[in-house]
Length: 236
Length: 193
Image (cartoon, rainbow over all chains, first blue to last red; front, side, top):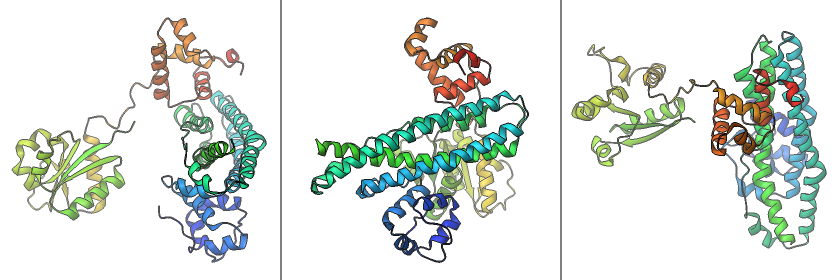
């Protein structure tokens, strides 16, 4: 997929890829974009154009992930973005799946036990996911921020080199694995009578959350984690 | 899990070759394509492990010794069908045909082949031993304990687990648990659900 550049009209990009709407919303950009270019919109909202573009482009292209470039952004920018994605999951996407799942179970044949089990599976996923988000907000992100603040005092020179150390990659994220299983169980192992339309709505909502989390995790494990371990080394 | 189709294109016409390559990668991925402008280069490469060969009638006729035994894996590009030769339509592509027709012919060509790179639908049912292992996994018993309980080695337990995941397409313990309940291998009460 061709990349998005700063001189392109944001409205055209969004019309082509409506899945970007929640992403730009996270940056505070709202619809009613007019004919403004990405750069103009960013200036108006006082956003870092480069950062927004990198996020948009990695979101649209699964193969595109400019690690070095992402690591040059400030830790607080990365954390802000990850925090916003977490909020979006908690406030909208999770409740959205819940709503669809609720009516899916209610509108399908009562007594289809496999649906109730899917409902239970989802709530166990939700618990695990909520726990991770809470830990992010209360422990992990504040810790990252404090490290980065401590380092402000140091010169920025040594930092660059250290940042590229240790970019190990987490392959199996438990949250991603649970979502993949939830989808797979529905697609492969659903049985009995059920409401087709609502079933699709549930799977569609799960897929869109899955895509978003995948992107969140890439930044989390391949950018923030190595940043933090590099900062830890510098603080020692 | 997906097997890359190894494809050799033996054609001297560069544009034909690029066109074919783009159709193959767009519509029949995953493919791995090697390009040989002349047959000699293919034979010199010493590699004859390709799954499919694409060439033209001329090259085919000049090298029947090579292509006849590989007849089912070879697709021949011809310019037009004016010589009423309807003998083996599935192994010919008319280069002047519409893109739609060509894609359909390629689709048939790849699906006729019985090498089985696509279908892994068989044997999805769990064996009774795998069901036993599954029941123990979802109760939260460790691999080591499962091995002791069933009197099998730890490695065997691990390979059962691998097969279960591969057959069901489910990786997490929670996922396996719900699968086991849905299929009555275990009741929700047993594990406190």
